[in-house]
Amino acid sequence: MANGAIAANEHPAPHGVNGQTSAIGITTHGSDWYWAVTAVMAFSTLVIIGLSFTRPRTHRIFHYITAAITLVAAIAYFTMGSDLGQTPIEVEFKRSNSKVSGTATNQNREIFYVRYIDWTITTPLLLLDLLLTAGMPWPTILYTILIDEIMIVTGLVGALVQSSYKACLWGYYVFGCVAFLWVAWTVTFTARKHAIGLGADISRTYLICGVWTIFLWFLYPIAWGLSEGGNVIAPDSEAVFYGVLDIMAKPVFGALLLWGHRKIDPARLGLHIRDYDDDPATTSATHAAQHGEKADKGDGAVTNGGTTTAPATTENV
Image 1 (cartoon, rainbow, N blue to C red):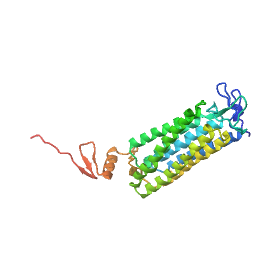
Image 2: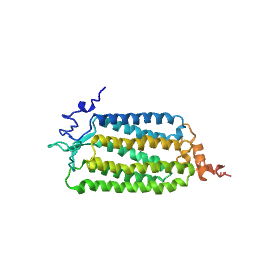
Image 3: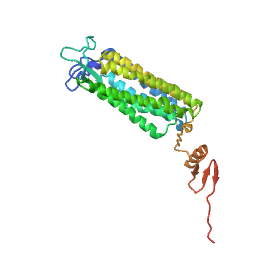
């Protein structure tokens, strides 16, 4: 059956939003590709959720995070395949190529803001997967996620800017790139040192997934500069560029991560997760035994490195 999503969502013309239209937008080929990526993301989500049931509930945290990543991506690509979640923005750079030149009266390019909503949710989750694997402290994780959000938001603002003043568009691009370099430094150097101290298997898993992620993320600014920023490649080519990157950065990343975690106990990463039917006192004592700490059992007794000491008592004479 032919893809009629673009025709069905004409408002009032193809790629129309709020009375404006985009002369530079995806064709049915681009829409078909977005639907294909939707299928990949949705299938990956189902597989990851299925695999989570092969693990104890206390060991599913990375399955849950990774499934959330692909689920959000599936919804975003479903939206883009339907030619929704976009807005017309006049391009700064007028090109002679017929695929990106527009018309004499319309040089608007279709900008999918839903892509940035996706990234605003999924890139922090990707970082959470990585930084939890490295056993990073929560303050560093939260701060890195904040910098990541700055990276995404500045990219969105830069894409939506309508100004002939180049400093506006590319100023946001620079802000985003600086934020990315900060994130890349944390992932590549700081977190790697933490992972090394947790064991060879954890270090290996982190190194593979961290290098894979940062390598791919270096390509996103290039895709942005060629599409939303520079209007060099057609929206269909933009769809393929971003789609391939997202497949590599989400389902493939997830496969590498979960394979690496198959024999790693989350407790080794400092993630002590109690199931609903676990005895809180037992969980506390196990945690204390692993770290040589004192755990209060609730009755005044103290567990110290696996040895329980009864509380001192005072008798009235």
